[in-house]
Image (cartoon, rainbow, N blue to C red):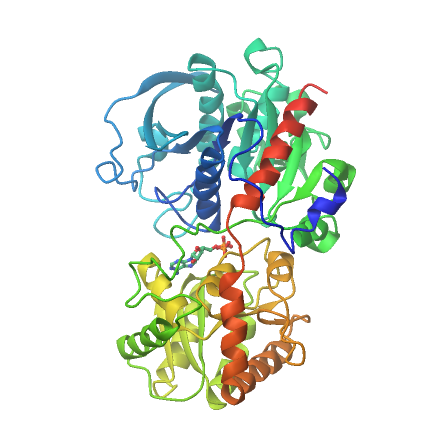
Length: 508
Ligand code: ADP
């Protein structure tokens, strides 16, 4: 793949939905929608699996069978294929339960009560990482390889995602290196966020089953710790990340979180492929989770969605735009900038709705601003998929002021729902949002460069002013944004090419 292909925009219409050559694809993820979701990784793993299967490949998606996954709703069988995995000196048993939700797609749920039969996915109820996360995901990673060897044909590619599955490329190049079954299997790892690397104390090394020889800076060691994302980055045949801009940012010290040197060393294997959105789920013309449906030709439904949302939240009446946030309240999301200037935005006539949860201090700050806003701001702490759809449909401006953002999905959902994104120019936000130019009518939203409160505030002022003074142009901009194609079809084609490349590189 040439460097040129890293520029994902503007995109050309694909000639057909079918790939040239169907592949045997395995996608492994610690979460995937609609079965289990804590963040964007789930949207991506679920939607990419469906898109690859739709394009003709045979896809097996592997995820852990967490306690929270609704067995009944998703028709997950009570029994499955039994397997066992060595974990240190023990043999741990589990079963793999399979469903076939659509043509060409199988979902394999890895059941293991001791590891996955608990409330949280990664965190305990107090919000702390489970202390045995290395053991849980080492088991999961190895289980995938053990199950593959006893069921069906060898895959051409195993597509891993983030640190939880970073051991798979390492296993393929170490303890499974001589296994004929995997002789032609390539591995690809996608980095969804460099900020989460899965770092563990070396005393847990014995749980991996890999020789100590690999605990060094050329292997799985990083700054004295075991680093599972690094395992993937060292051993995978191809490395991808979720936008072209982020693919450049992670090569620099600021974006590399300590692994930029390794990534520069492997730069010829690093590719940026923009995430898509699941257009079956995020489409205002068919969305059953919003009060009125609409499309770019007839926007009356959007006005109804806004009125319904304002009424539901008991917002004070006003002419100004409704600004919105749906986000984890976590480091990197830029929420401290917003908390610092939100009152000024409200004072200028904006109204505000937020749905989010995370850092307690931020939650408290936003709740306090809402309670003293005289009904101009509504803040809901929690996680609510259905509510997030009503917000996307009812808002005018969607704020994503991230310090860094590998891809970001919510700005693309906003575009699809005729809600202008206002973002900082970083990562995938930079690749998907183009600053609107009133003179030429070009652009789909608002973008600021500097990570500062004043830059965010002045961009919000510009957007509000435009909304209030030139509604005709505003509506045209929103309508054009709705017509942009951010579906998975293009990115699935790029992954298909990279899968073939990884398979060709395996063993080299
Ligand atoms: P990240 O993966 O860093 O959280 P993304 O923008 O890639 O960021 O994906 C976030 C996903 O999680 C989106 O689908 C967004 O709608 C959803 N989301 C985030 N917070 C909430 C929330 N509080 N309630 C419902 N959905 C949320």
